[in-house]
Each structure stands twice: as structure tokens, then as C-alpha cells.
Image 1 (spheres, rainbow, N blue to C red):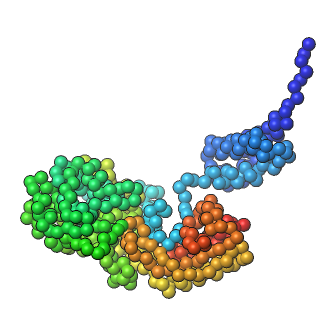
Image 2 (image 1 turned 60 degrees about the horizontal axis):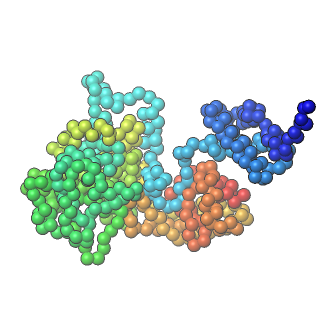
Image 3 (image 1 turned 180 degrees about the vertical axis):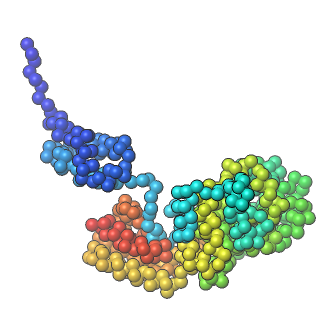
Length: 478
């Protein structure tokens, strides 16, 4: 006797109400052809499967109990939204309203338009990366920027690697492996990401010889540490902190004769990569930051610095100085592992060319332009943005102007606040919740929460981004 047919459960019937994968994908392709054309088919299918897995989970948990809510027509808008959000690239543009110019987590320096065009051309076409157009033979990739670096710093020679940590590592590996390098205790810095000078020195194979005390080091300390094991004297610019009070350090002008007498190089890790006198360009608050040219002029044999901090270019580590010390670095096999690619090279050359005219660099290099904005200009920018926000947000939020402070960031000028005018946004939603909603937007808007308000600093928002910021806030508050 045939047993009676078992009736499906209510849950099973709900599962059956879900549309097939092929039907769902076809519907998305018909209704949103531009969206589906931009995504590889396997990724599109994976995103749809993820959406339907979430729907099945909702059925199991009793959060979806009506069959009519599971039809293709009912689910299509949510499916499309899921594909739009989950299908976005992981690495994407954000709006920086934090007021931190060199925001390491947000990519540090913005490139000048000239550098952006150079990168696009280098990416889209063949180039003379290592080809000498005069001889038709193989050339050096460093030749494209070495002349510019020499002209801007007064160095005899230069080369570039992929970041400043690599520059320091290569320098020490070349001259000090198995030997001692003298460094003041007050200069054993750590920067973001737990990068520490002692750790880099250990990795290069050299031996750290600490001298002096944390707050005071004298010339006699360096002299007493010199021996036949000494390979170099190294100065490290403390760009991300300051020691104040009872403090002294030995300058390059005093150390240079000591190093020369013993036939060893005097090196300085400048770190932040400054090429201009900020005081001369109208920003006295930043006027005490040394330039690469000044470091070499004061007696350093070699200086290393970043390309994507105060210089305002791409991530790179620049090594400049006397030819007798630079040439051996070129021949180090490690140099090939650390060299820059064609895109970095194109961006760096375009950026350095702007510095040939400091006034032009001030206008064209975004990092310099933002750092050199005065209080009046920032107040005017803030007023423009507030006007736009008032019109866009209507009664959803209250916006008002308030004095505030911007920061340089990138481990530079740790104690220097730059005066600015903030736009303080208050709404029915808590500032932390508004901040979270803005991070989920397209593009995400990153600001800061202060005194129970979400704040935007116009220093790091370009005028062309104001409408995007207004739309991001409007969507987050909707």
C-alpha cells in the first residue's frame, strides 16, 4: 500500500517561492544593463547567490513569512541594491573632510593634475622607461628624475626606491652590514604601522650603537662611540614627535667634520620629504621643518625622504647626496627588489617639475595648496559649503560654522594645529550613527565627531567635492 503523500511544510513552500537564479539574473540584466555590464558574470552570480542565502536565512529565522514578499518582482529592488553595494570595488574613492591633509589611512598625498595625466599616459602606452632615445640602447629609469632631484636639493647624485623605509634599508645594507651605525637615543623613532628605526637597522644587518640620553646628546657622545667597527653616523629627523624642555642634540654642521675625519658617511633620514620653505610661502606655523636641500648643505653626505608626504607626490623613497656614496647603492642587488615602477616614476617626475617654480608648486601640488590655505580662505570655503548643505538638508539637520583645527598628518608637525573653520552638523540621529551611515555611502564621507556634532573641515575637501558631500549627508539622513 502506497503511504500517503507528505504535505510540504510552510517553510518549504516559502523556499519554493524564491525565484530561480537564472530568472533573477536575467531580470537584473534587463532592468540594469549598465550595472551588470560592469561586473564579471561569475561575480554577479556569486553576489546573487549571497543575496538568496540571506533570504533563506531570513525564512529559517521567521523574518520572512509571506510568499508574496519572495517573488521576483518583490525581491528585485533589494537584489539590485545588494549587487550595487556588495559589488563595489574594495579599494575606492572617499571624501576626506577630516582636515588631516596627509591622512595615512586615506592614501596620504593627492597628486597634482599633471602627475595624474602622466600616470595615465604611462599606464596606457609604451614608454622609454629604460630606453635611451639618443643612443637607442638600454637606459636607466633613474635618469628621468635624477637631474630634477639634483637641481632641487643640490645633491651630486640621486636614485629612487619604492618608499622611505626601503631607502633607509638599502642605505644601511650597502654601507653598514655587520658593522655599527651610531644614532642618538632621542632619534630612535617609531612611525605608523610599527615601523621602528632599530628594527629596520637590524633587518639591514647593521649593529645599532646608541649614544646620549633620550633628551640630550652631545658631540662627545658620538666621538666616544667611534671605533674601527663604525660604518656610519645617522641622524633621524623626529618628524612625528618633539622633545621640549631640557633638551639638546648635535647638528649636522658639528657632526660632518667628525664623520669626514673618520672616512664614514653622515646620513640623515629626513622622513617627511620637504622641498620648500613654508614660512617663505606664507605658512609660518610650518616654517621650522628642514628641507632636503638644507640637510645636504649643512653637511649630510646622504639624505633619504618620502615622496608622498610633504613633497606631495607618489609613494617613493628618495636617496640623494654625494656621488661617492650614492654610486655604490646603485650597484646593490637589493636595489632591484626595491625599485619604483613606471607609474610611480611618471607621477614623481611630473611633481618634481612643478617644484622648479615654487609659486607654481604652491598652486598645483594639492598638499602644498591645502597646507598653505589661510584662515580667511578657509572661512570662505566653509561658508560656501554650509550654504550648499543648508539647501540640501533643509530641516533634516542644523549646520553652523565654528573655529577648529586641521592637522598636517603623515607623521609631520605633530604639535602644529592649523586654524580652520569647521561646519558642525547636528541632527536627530546621533553623530556616531551619522558617521557610520556616511561610511556606507557612495562615495563614503569621512569626517570627525567633536562635541556631540559631526564636523567637516573644508581644508581637505575640494570645491568640486562639495556637492558630493552634500548628497552624502542628505542620503545618510534620509
